[in-house]
Image (cartoon, rainbow, N blue to C red; front, top):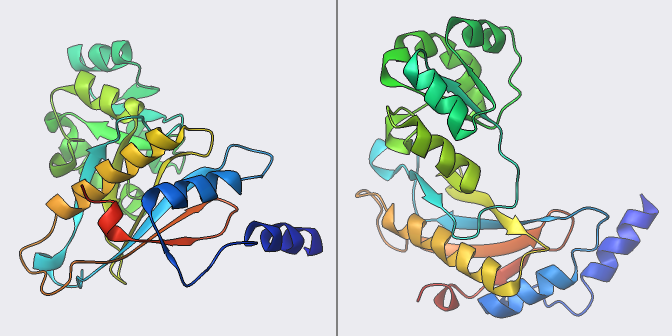
Amino acid sequence: MAREGKRLKSAYAEIDRTKFYTLAEAVALIKARATAKFDETVEIALNLGVDPRYSDQMVRGVVELPHGTGKTVRVAVFAKGDKAEEAKKAGADLVGADDLFEIVNGGTMDFDRCIATPDMMGLVGRLGKVLGPRGLMPNPKLGTVTANVTEAVRAAKAGQVQFRVEKAGIVHAGIGKASFGDDQLVENIRSFVDAILKAKPAGAKGSYLKKVSLSSTMGPGLKLDASTIVV
C-alpha cells in the first residue's frame, strides 16, 4: 500500500488539480504518468446537465472510435441458420441459439458484447435479468439487434463504444490505451465527445456539457477545458 501511495504521489507531481488543461496538454500528461506494468486504459468522464430519472433526459448511444479502444472484444451472437454462419465468418467468438441461451442463463458470460438477430429476441428477452444488469442486453437502438450481423460484429471488434448516462448524470468510457499516439487519443476523444453532444436529449435544459475529466487506469485525473475538445 505504501508503494502504491508513493507511485500515485509521484504521478501527481507537477499537476495542478485546479487547472483546466487543454486536450493536448492533458493527453501528454496522462500518457507520461501511465507507468503501470500493463498498458493502461485512458478513460474519459463527462458530467452532463441531465437527470436520467426522466425519460426525456436519458443519454444513450454508440460511437465507433477512429482508432478503436485497444481492447480485445469478445462478441456473442444469438442467431441460427445462415445468420449463424455469417456471424462465425465475421469473427464472432460465440454463436448459437438455444445452446447459447443455456450457457448464458447458467451464468457464464465470457463476452463483452451481445448481438442478436430480430427473430432471436423472443429467446434473448428471457435473459433480461441476466444480461440487463451487465449492460449486455441487445438493443436495436444500439445496433445490436440486427439482421446485418456481419457489420455488427465488425463494428464491435473495431472499437465501437456504447455509452449510457448514470444516475448522477455522468458518462464514462475507455477511449484508448496509453500506448496510443497523442493524435490517436485526441481524435478518439473528440469523436466520443461529439457523439455525446449529438445525443443531447430534448429534455436537457441549461448547460449540457458541464465537466470533462481524463485519467488513466492507475493515474491521476485531470480537468479538461471543454472548449479545446469541440472543434
